[in-house]
Amino acid sequence: MAVSSSKTNGFANGTCTANPASPLPLIISGGGCVGLFLALLLSSLPCPAHIFIIEPDSPDPTLTRAMAHQPSTYPILSRVPGLLPQLIRAGSLSSGLCFRTSIACGGRVIAEKRFENGVEGMKGKGQLLLPQGKFQEIMLRMLEGRDVEVKRGWRVKGVVARGKESVSVEIGDGEGRREVLEGAYLIAADGGKSIVRKDMGILFQGDTLDAQLVALDLHFPFESHCFHDANFIIDPVNYGLIGRILPATPTSPALWRVSYGVSNGLSAAEVEAGVDTKLAAMLPNQGLDAHRNKAYRVVQVAPYKAQQLLAETMYTDHVCLVGDAAHLTNPYAGLGLASGLADASSLADVMNRILTGNAKEPATLLQSWSAARRRTFLSAVDKPSRMAYQRVRRDVSSDEKVHDMMTMDPMVGALRRGMPAMPALSLETKGEELEGW
Image 1 (cartoon, rainbow, N blue to C red):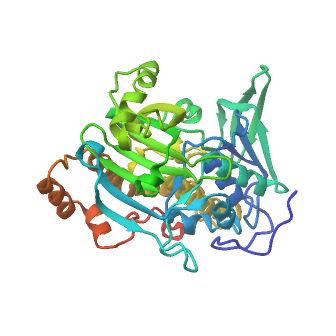
Image 2: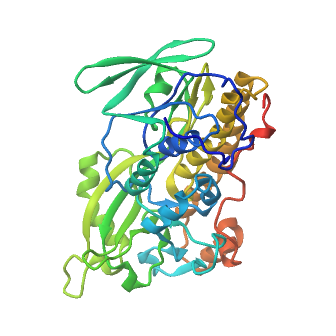
């Protein structure tokens, strides 16, 4: 059992009642970034419950799916003492971002922002560049010694019972073993294909966009071509994002992400077959060196659906949804993982209120939390993400069209004026403003 701290760790109401509202454990389905961050927050509560994390896959420190983390998440991550400094030491801060035309249109910078990474504090700093696998590795280390049990190799098979005070779930492993766990609450952080969400019959509402996206990791000397750490490529066909994942080391060149769109009808094999043609259209000098040989080395190619989806509810009968289990968005506004971390942060506040016995009406509070998080997704995530997707697909093939974009697009205009490149609306939810608090 972890030793309780006298510190409140940023939680409102750090007082534990003599009899906690529920002695049952909390069950988190999914041990990705959002699930692990939620476990760190919940295990820091004044009245921490035992926590089960059900995760089928082994840790993979090479995982790069999420690789850039917005400055808007820094206050959220700072709620776990010591976490943000460790993440920064393990990664790096982006030195700048820009919008630029495609190579076919000259590859020129339309608008840019340089970050002040040398100043004290986090204000004005760039994005945190850190692959998802390393992010998770750090959080797993921080969970050691806490009242958290990670059931690795197990997955939630379904919800088998929901009572007035608890929820029971069946879990299974790859060897056919089955167990039933009873918990005060089940929190689904098991991704866009969430078994929990599907088993509960909660609808995923929204759109699949008109192209699938490809996350391609490669080594290529973008630095020698004056690329920023993040480059949004504006073009109706060869649009995308070129961003640094890892800096160069004495033994390895820098690792970069090239994200681009392809037809929804292409198979994974067809996407793979078209990689060299796409890179020839997106990389400087067609991706070739002075001897006309390939100057790049592809590390991985991962096509996926571009979707804007939101669960019809994020809470029902002792089951909560967070992160990709609750909502999906395209990557061009950088708000996918950020919104999931904000889900976890606000849910930890709500759970603290409930577990300390201070919530006026727990079910009402959780329903209010769900409604608030859904509103925040629609206004602060879905809308700007759709705008970002349309932005990179604009036609900027002439000076007039570039001028139109600079004057009409709020994001590009903000960069031209030197304003912060972050969401205009807060991703966070204040628990004390929720009904039932």
